[in-house]
Image (cartoon, rainbow over the protein chains, first blue to last red):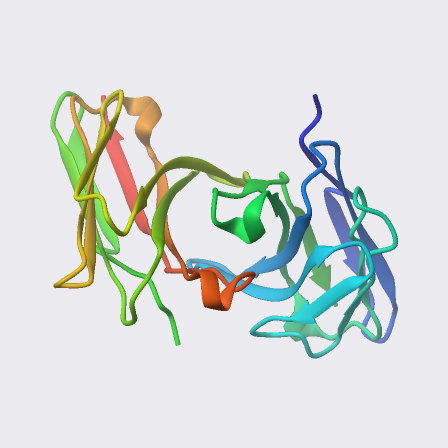
Length: 113
Length: 112
């Protein structure tokens, strides 16, 4: 049982480039979300989804897009990378929209130069 | 603004001592969750306490919740070097489902 799998683990982008961070879970969780964590800080919610075909914005959605075509996958797209998007990105999933606790992936460390 | 805020920001203790960290929040909640994050890793769910519960135990962990003061505490007893990590609280509100908020965490260092 893999849990939540994020790829890649590390990525360096140039300003203006686009890329997709992948997230997949094999626990049949309806709820999935993306957070970013800046040094010494907590997690800030970017986007979330309560089921296939349903997504919504979190606290810091600007510059990011998401889609949820299947229960298993929830990719995060950076449209035009900026240095301010340098961060560690975590994907999380849960039953009950997070009310039962989240399972997190191991993170993607992104640097934008 | 942050719903859950941990205190202290950093805590350093000797192995075998107890570690207590606190979480304060602003609005009514349905449950509160504590997580651990080892350096460079994802968060791991430790324990969940519902709004109608006052205390919960899991191994060496003891969590209390005081809804009148809008605060929670996490106690780790007989700490070990392996407990060195950052600890975060997250609040959950059913009417705001999908938007759990995390504090900035308490960094715990347990010295051997």
